[in-house]
Amino acid sequence: MSELITTGFGEALPPAPRHAITFHLPKWANLLRLLEKDQTLFNALKNTYPRMLPKPDVKALAAALGEFLNLPPGTAVVIFTSLSSASECVEFATQTPRAEGMLDAPKGPDPVARDEISIRALRVAKTGTKLFAVVLPAQNFPNVLQFWQNAGLGIQSRLAEQCLDNLDSLEEVTKDCSVSPRTESPGHVEVKERIAGLVERAPVGGPRPVQVQADDIYLFQTGMTSIYRVHTWLLKANSLEAKTAFFGFAFYTTLQIFHEYGTGNKLIGPGTDEELIHLEAFLESEKNDGRKVQAIWFEFPSNPSLTVPNLSRLRDLADTYGCYLIADDTIGSFCNIDLLGPSGADIVVTSLTKSFSGYADVMGASAILNPMASRYAELKDLFTQNYELDYCPLDAAVLASNSRDYLVRAKTFNTNTQTLVSYFQSKVSDPKSCITGVLYPNTNPVFKANFDAVKRPTTPEFEPGYGCLFSIEFESVEKLEVFYDCVNLHVGPHLGAHRTIMISYVKGLYGKQMEWARRFGLRETMLRIATGLEDVEGLIGDFENALKVVDGLRGNFANDADF
Image (cartoon, rainbow, N blue to C red; front, side, top):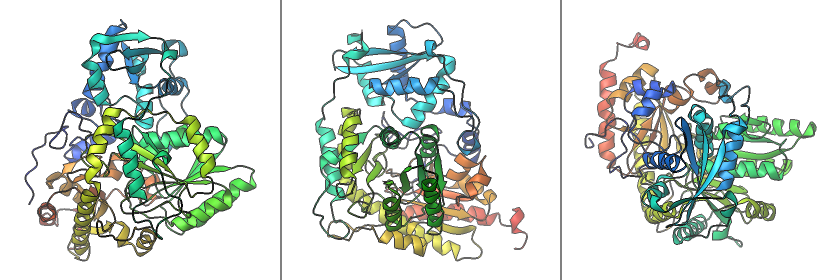
């Protein structure tokens, strides 16, 4: 058994540094509060995921700016580090929300009146930091919070801390004084060069004649920022009328981005080979109606079902119908898989916050242009015209430092996860066990074949695996709940960290839309587990102890009548 977890409710995973990006949310009852978006739960969190809610340093800086600007009580301040991001926030907050929200969600808040929202530009003279404060009535804060959460463009906590330490040099400036391009820091350069080396390390099919260079890699504040930016740039470049297709299943916020921006999107899942027929039918229908589908997106593998699409067939469809092909490889991780090359994706986006960083204390993301893609030149022009370096050098330095042992940690992630997957598979074969399924790329023959087709060859320095994330299925929600409340694990929405983290992802996010979610292979009996770097035998002991509690209650559940 692992060391007993003593992390308190709402606290970050140990060692919980000032800028930690996790929080511990134990107990099923709190998961249900999360599902209900219980504001008292969020208020009680001692730490938070930076894209979910502003962290304490960000809140303190917002209060300080409000005082400096002599704003009246009842005014909210939301901080960005580029004028373009602040302007996009204002545009979002003043637009009427879509009548029918994603997943049949309730209609969003009413728009903010244009004369009630503004942007104030400031500069911290000692550091040269430029800040753009979106100022609006506090009652309208939910409007901008939605933008903060989805686009992920808000100021990060390290920069906020630095600004707080230098408030004596704060000054208000005009907005047009601050549009000069930023230069890359040593941290930016190190991260980009590391990624370029990793994606060209042991490529599938051998060394390529044209390789990814550091200049083909673009850094962003968060994983969602990379998706938001790429999606909206493509909309501007092609046609605001063009739809977007997503094959498989997408992260919750990705679907929200596609819903809020553009004229429509098509989610085709859960991502098996059979659904490729439906994707092709959709592309053909749009073509026949004179409409263009701008891009096909996919996760490799998907979260949380770990489905793995057929990259070769997606590439063929994208070429046939003139779509960009865009992959999110966050779960597979580019140490394990190669989604580039002549038959790969046009763009690969990655949340570097996860296993690339590995220590749950910094946010970051990348978008990689495939130099061997047929449309590389036009994408390069698009990114050159639109990209603005807005990733904080302080965060880049931490990300650079964290990622130096990426391959070492990835090896542990792979081996620990495979050991746990094998352990739970042995439970599935036991008719008395409450575990009925294990979802991992290599537990389904078709998905394993699709994964293995892009899995990097083994080298002396690294043996690729299937990643750090898997899901297990319980016989019933009631048994999952018992397990959830007694297992000695951290609970939260993160993955790729130094500690193992679980969450009932489907129940917590889609518990009110289960009929919709089941269409895409999601079930509320699923539990997502992100393996960490702990001793795996200790983790097995933790799982074994919790399963014994569930099994000890056999006969107390409604579906145990036959036993």
